[in-house]
Image (tube, rainbow, N blue to C red; front, side, top):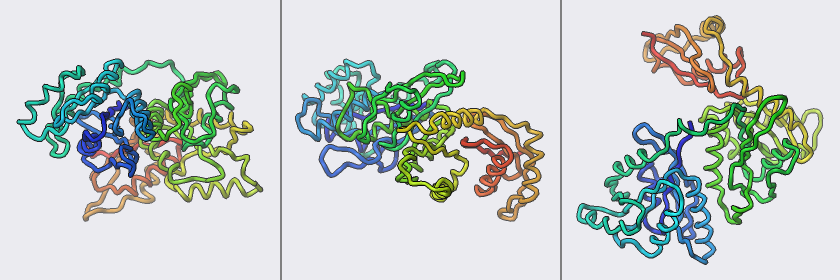
Amino acid sequence: MSRAIVAIIGRPNVGKSTLFNRILKKRLAVVDGEPGVTRDRNYAQADWRGKSFYLVDTGGFVPASKNEIEKMVKAQVEIAISEADVILFLVDNKVGAQEIDLEIARKLKKIEKKVILVASKVDNEKEETDVHLLNRLGVGSPAPVSATAGRSVGDLLDRITDALPDREEEEAEEESIKVAVIGRPNVGKSSFVNALLGQDKLIVAEDPGTTRDAIDTKFKLNDLSFTLIDTAGLRRKSRVKNDLEYYTSLRTLRSIQRCDVALILIEAPQGLLNQDVKIFQEVEEMWKGMVVGVNKWDLIEKDSRTLDQYTQRMKKVAPYLDYLPFIFVSAKIKQRIAKAMDLVIRVHNERKKRVETSKLNDVLRKEIDRKPPAAAIGKYIKIYYCTQTDIEPPTFVFFCNYPKLLQKTYLRYLENKIREHFGFVGVPIRIKVRKRE
């Protein structure tokens, strides 16, 4: 189930980043040296009353500004609004509704989004008596909060979670393998899709960060139906020259949430970078299948050892992700594009694989006896049996006498043995430990 997106918007200096940090209980929002431009870490996952959502911080919204920086922020905010399920419209209660607030309110009334008007900087009961003056904005009754002191933030979160859409009622898409093509800017995502489809359906741009929308493309290959989510697709009408990369990340997150398998592209000349590893970790945390496409392989000078050496270097950077399959491709000359999709099919099938309990225990019992878990605080840990309880992702439950004492390193050992005997190539495995009653 995908998480909803809640965007915080408002004119400059109304307390958006302060509220962002207060809800997350962390100082994540960072303001760039240039005034009004919020950049680093502009979204994060929030949880309240058992519901999770992505909270998005934005820069100060000045709809009619001619200033280049403010125009850039305006473009960012508009994209955040288009992506959001719920919008928090912050107004500084200490100074009341300004003309720019009225202009923002007029824009919000034209879109079909759930809007919560937030009266910020309401530090006491006396100031709370003035919030009714914001009703003239015409976007609902204001929720008074003081992000600095934390006053009434819980009440606001109640309103947010009540407004969140029911994700279980999301689109009932036809049965197909859903593939998200993701990666750093300018790794050739759209070029890969165009090479696969054999047509220039999607716009390809050389400039990094040109992506604005995730465009779904349905097609068939070897009698199998695919839905290709190209996070590098660009709709011409939304072309923006300024840096909007972090909002692109929001769309990538949604694309990951919706997919079965993520085809992650990296650049062969640059190798595996930390940013690539972070993308792998993001997909792994969402329990999606992964295939790594090393693109622009045609630019590498090769001999008989190049491929093995390159693979070993990548696994050295991220050894804990050695279960991922790699394929060396070139979107430009259409090299191994079809083979990459064969790997996608394989990983998709691996996510659905189920191992019989008897077979699982026959194999793992020998491995556990060969290397039993270490004792902890003087207690001997005994694993009784294991069973696979779910697929997509494959989930295994181990029953033992002291679940809380089983070390993470041993859980990794069990995972490795499951992979060694049963595969699950490209698929994150979820392992749970329970006490046998």
